[in-house]
Image (tube, rainbow, N blue to C red):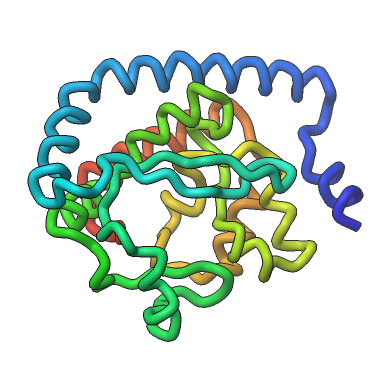
Length: 218
């Protein structure tokens, strides 16, 4: 069933798929390089602030995520939580504010002071430009889930893992934390079925508009 659905979600013509794939990868390489260059001064400032608050902790946080075809990779973020955040997660699972195979908590006690700021503005996500440059991720696509989340996925949910994961996507610009897990899956599958370069550019533009407001990221 999964293979059948994957084929159904593929772009209509093979030529269209080749053009889309090559153009999208070119956009990813150029976009990530320009982004890393433009934001390099901000990287330095955030790194200093993180170290000042917690000298013993690392600046970057590497976390195993599940990408295209369920392949695991290390996703980079600025560290926004205390060093032992993963160990403390078990104590907080009952307070999850998102339905389904995902964990979100608005007032998560594991988040540091600088972490609250970089999460609110989504600055903590900028190191994922390295993942885009490496090819682990794309600028636009479904968000890569955690291994423990994928363990709870149905075969239908796993259809969102048939394309390269993204830094932003249709879910993020359509309500993000105000939506349920199942709504996220449906939006991801809608994106996969209708994906195009024009659609990707539209999502990127909407993402910049949302970041300017930066009011519902947590």
